[in-house]
Length: 287
Image (cartoon, rainbow, N blue to C red; front, side, top):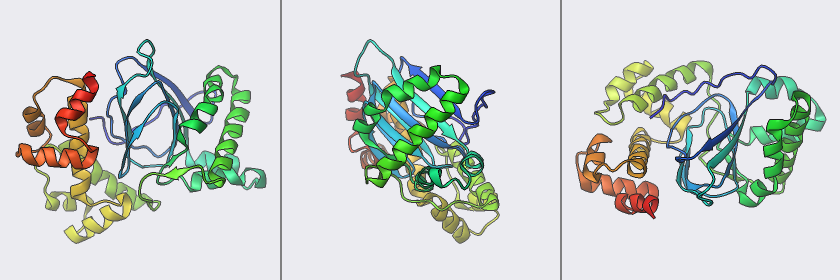
C-alpha cells in the first residue's frame, strides 16, 4: 500500500497538474487521497475502481472527477488491446486555483458548480469519455497558454454534461473538513493504512485523534461516511485484490497477511466487497 496522503509535484509552466500514465503491467491498487480535485480518463483497461465507499467496474473510456481528500484507486484486470498499455490521462486542480482563477466570473460559474458537486466523485460514463478522448490527448502537446484555454473548455463541456444529468455521483457525500478536523482524521487514516493488517485498537485510534472513542466514531463517520470497521475491511480487501492479481501467493496466506485469521471470514468479506470469491477474482486475471 502507498502512503495515504499523495503529494503531487508542481509543473513549472502550469497552474494545474497533469500526467499521461501508461502502464504495461497494469494499474495497481494504490489506495490514496490528496487535497486536489482529480479528473481521470482511463483507456484500454478493464477492472475495478474504488472511490470512497463506492466499488464498481470500469472499462475503456471511464471518465471520473474525484473530489478533494476522497480516498480512491483503480485496479486493472486486463487490457482491451493486449498490444498497448493501460492508459490513465490525469488532470489535477487545487481549490485555490478554482477560487482564485475562476473567481467571480459569471461565465465560469458552471465550472465552479461542477467542482462543488464533485465531493463524492462524479462518473461521466464511457460514451462521454470516448468523445472527449482526442481533447484529453491533445492537452499534452499544447503550449501553456493554449493548454489553459483548452482545459477550461473541457471543464465547461463536463459542466454542461452534469447539468444535463449525465454525471453519476459515486461515493456517499462527504462534508468539507476544517483544517483542525483534517489533521485529526489524517492521523487516524494514516494509522489505519499503516497497520490495517494487524490488530487495530479503537483506544489507540482515539488517542491519536485526541478524542473519546465515541467522539472518534462520530468524527470518522462524518468525514468518511463509513464506520471504522467497514473502512478497515475495504483496506484489507484492497490489499488482497492486489496480491491476488499480482502474485501467486496461496489464498490462505493472503488472508493471513491482510489481517484475517479465519479463511471463511476472509472469503465472506472479500465477496461482500467485490461480488466474487477470491479464487474467482484471481482467475479473472488469468483468463
